[in-house]
Length: 443
Image 1 (cartoon, rainbow, N blue to C red):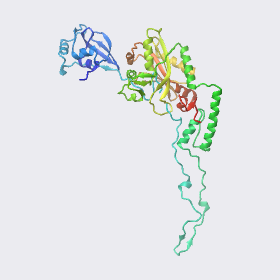
Image 2 (tube, helix red, strand yellow):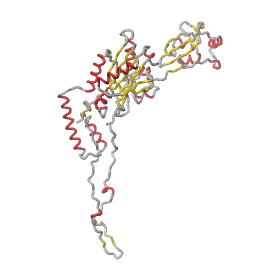
Image 3 (cartoon, one colour):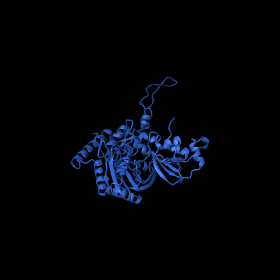
């Protein structure tokens, strides 16, 4: 027979057996992914793991207790029914309030440590499907100077159809038609500040490709002679310097993490969004966000570092994302958070404003919500989400051993580059062997 978890037993009995054997009535019970927060009728409150085989679960399952709590003032009937292993018709039920399951937002990573922001892999701008246009000469049968077969009249006389030049339409010169693969090739060779209209283009594909190849080779040689700095790496160093100067401690967490961390974030095996996670073996996965590592660091630094604790991390994350010009399966996240005093929305928005002002990126603040953190603050650049920020505490904190106020935000570095330099395709500024600083290297 399957052992029921502790929350199910509490829902059935409405009672609690403490470690010293006292039988309590339950006023309220809140559940998270792993823990229960129980408030007794006498006012005592505890937090305990939602176990199937722990001491408390065994006591409730076997209806064993030492004596009832005087402060809870349990009715004799409830005590007698519990002692007699409660028949179904006499069950006393208590409502167990379940904190809403924590999940990823499929549309934005709006968590700290998620990029979010959540980025399409197609070139920007809509590309019309490659329709084949036919000239009038292709749609109509050709007119010959003389009919191929003689026309015989009633009197068997040959009649020749005269050639009428005025009836022949002048054939228009055909426009250049580009296949979809040719369009994609041209778009991949364009620099961030270049544009092309295929419908108005008079040059052939070969001419366009040759011109762009020559220019891209010059661009790469110029980069090699001048800066030799990768944009993504340079942005990471710039942001690191900014936060260190602001008093934040830089941390580095493992990329390969236990899948149990994702269950604490509310993305268990039974969740649809768990399919976005790259699994490694049975129990491990590539991290889809930085939040688990930051939670662990905050818990370990609590009561060690001075108040408030301020930390940040920049590193790669992985998700099975759909194609688009703002999404990547491998992307770089920045997450910063502060725990303790002065953890207000005003402080959070001030930190975000200082960062984006330092980077020279325009933005607007939009109120939103997600299934992971509840109410969020979204940072938008035009129609692209740069970040999702949160003001804690939230119910999920107790699964990580956090019981203090906190604030935090997560940014996707590739999106920051796309916004700052107006790149059309986010792949051109990501970790890639096909692009360098937005310039195609497949030459």
